[in-house]
Length: 104
Image (cartoon, rainbow, N blue to C red; front, top):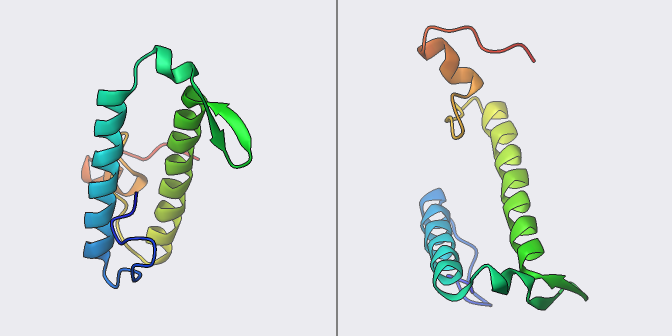
């Protein structure tokens, strides 16, 4: 599944990347919700030259997303951008709440 197609041009704007990400992630979530069940998490599929249960594939996909979110956090801080809180306040948002950020 590719919003830009197999030979599509690389997006030239953050807005195009964000729109494509929203479209693809929504399509994946809808497909999983409508086509998968608890039992199908045990179905084996070919993945990267191996055979994985779908539950493992889903776990790897989620962890891969987490990894890239961490990369984006670092890049945003290096660029001097405020990092939005996703799972609670980011370090930058603690001050806006009038609180000291947790020590790292």
